Length: 165
Image 1: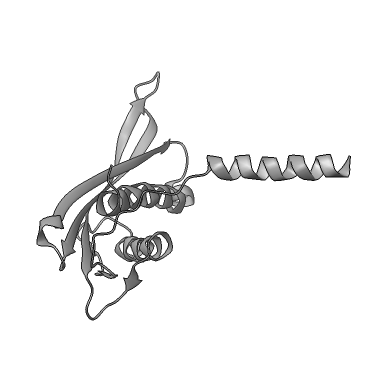
Image 2: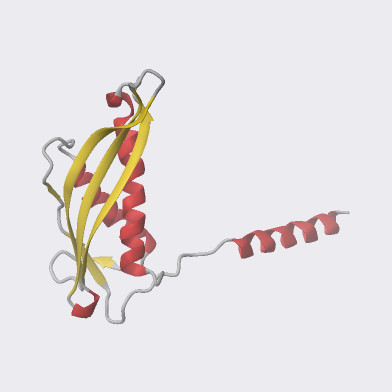
């Protein structure tokens, strides 16, 4: 019975490991290092630290999910960006024509510059949002909404920079 249990455990582990896949990260030949410039905060209604949050989270994501080394002096690729919009709008009216949902929207402009191959350079604008109950206090949930939006935008930036989708 013990041998059967061990065999089933090994088979289960093999099956589970075959279900997990890694991102198909493609880094151009010759690219070994990166630099993320401090993002610019162009929308003065945004939290003062939002540009720093994007900067640090993009650095962390690249360090953890790629083989690239951070190099501030002589990088092979450079990311720069601007938080160009941060706003709250009404998302859905309720029965009394008042807003039952509000929407927090963040717009980020990202520039990707390759010093190895100029053909890889691009500039894109990313927009993401999260809806929340208008009866809630934004200050209580703002950090979580921002974290979710940052994660979603940075996933798309990373995919545009390093995957062949």
